[in-house]
Length: 478
Image 1 (spheres, rainbow, N blue to C red):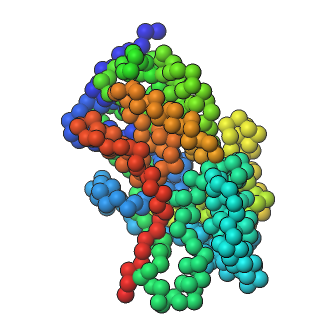
Image 2: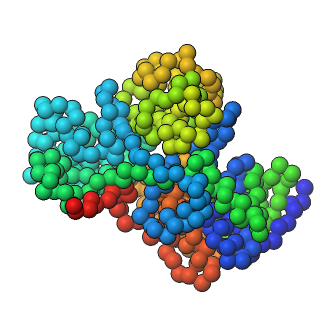
């Protein structure tokens, strides 16, 4: 079948936060745009799934950013549909709750005085005589920052559960934004000299913004605004990015009604960088193809449970650090918005698992996965009784998280240098740039890509590249 041809000024591959942000910005300034999104819904990993009156995000989401332009954008987009939600996120470990992001004082004293003394002694040892050699893995970085005792207690098992590889194989980059700035020295000082340290120590955000109907409301609202003048095509999977030398001429996509070809002057891609590069036709040079094949992603499963109880906890989400359990995180959508459930008498729970596509866990049937989650969360952790279960279903997400293994910088730079040779293509978003971005970063990359097409000169690679801890604020002096 000959593909139906669509001609636009700009074609955007992927309808997640980054792709929609680019389309929204271009539409606002009068440009002709088409978005090609593989799934039936826009929003990517930030979409909201509806099931029997319940709403589930694909994992928990909160809106918090230090970029005031993006805050203003979100407020103007959603207005009174944007709620302010108190923050409560904790780690469940050894039958106890700990603060998250990990507060050193809580981690230091939460395991008892004997263990606290061991943590401090171990910490002092690595500060006095740091281990020799390069700091190129998550394990290296964390041990030098906190000592081996704290690393083994709080970081090792959970991190390996999420990423599926030993911490010694995870790049030190992963530590910079997740635990950078946490200091045992400041924890002890703040515990002993609390009043004198006020106004000097960092704390964590205590509330965030959240769309009343789930994170996906943001992107459904953006889609509606784009469609006032342009096209957003869902169930449209791009299978070929067609080039002539250094220019992309078109993309070919499969749709429920047959193949289409989208011709454009400019192209923006937010789909996984590796998939996009491997879909280029004619293919890139062999070293570029090999680099794309060498980078990996971690896949994601949510087991969504509906429960006949008004509330399980007050947490927006909980990290499950118990080494013997496969569940990594769980979230109660109702605690972000009461509109996420059909009645105040019921609640819901998303139980998250990480795996590689095709492995034994991924191959389990949906019924097996629901039963697996109920055994872990109800029978083992006792967060609810299995007799209270109303229903359950499964949401699977391929290529959800770029896997930042040691040595990933080399292949990634090969890919990005190649993309720079294509004069009318930009890459944006979390998987599009192969960087662990949050929603705000993804949206920012989309805006900047759009502004580049309107005469700007923005380096998209600079977004979320400063290694700043993302959820810290400095307390005001009183």
